[in-house]
Length: 90
Image (cartoon, rainbow, N blue to C red; front, side, top):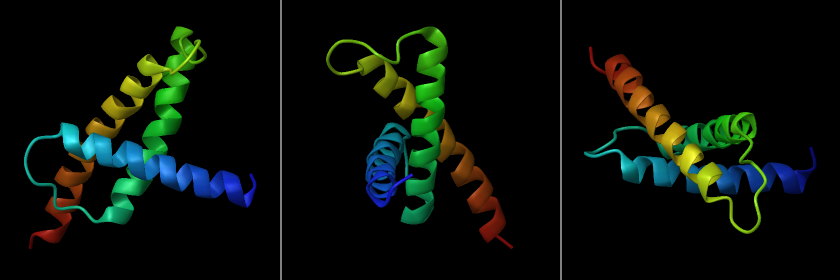
């Protein structure tokens, strides 16, 4: 992976993570770096799921793949909020 690929993954991860946070109602008490990591992982998992269903490569914008990535990011944000919040409280 090149430096451009890494930067692209971080930018796309930040966007997917932010969209995942927007979908989840309420305030999320997780740091921005965790949102980016969740977004990167969600983008990879969402692409794999789209590939398994055969909708990863379509003409134009891959709306189904994007929706899957955002849904996975939302689940990741919910899990992170529950785990991160539990860890912070003493």
